[in-house]
Amino acid sequence: MLDRLAAAVAVLAAPIDTAGRRQATVPIESIARAAGLLQGFADTIEVLAPAELRCTLGEPARRTVTLYRGALKRRRARARDR
Image 1 (cartoon, one colour):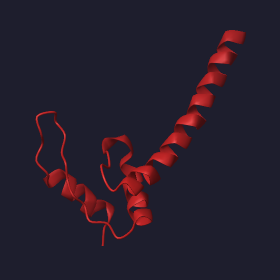
Image 2 (cartoon, one colour):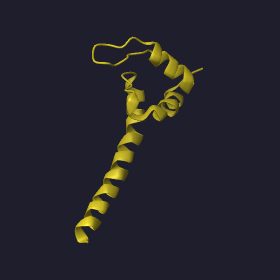
Image 3 (tube, helix red, strand yellow):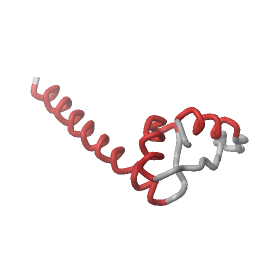
Image 4 (spheres, helix red, strand yellow):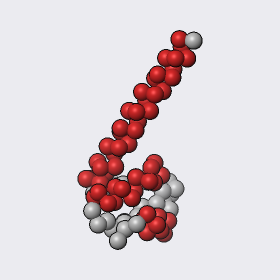
């Protein structure tokens, strides 16, 4: 069973490449469960495969960017109007 700690241990056990990154294989039970656990790592990890997991993780990230991009635009507009 994959849990957040097991995923972190797998990543930290992987060797660091010349770019300072680690590549690890982490077994998953399902796309949904893996996405739920890996979302907490935010931008500190990049899922390379399977593609379905990449897409599943990417969608909430896109929504978050959209949400905060709108907030930033509103803040800048208020600052301009002052």
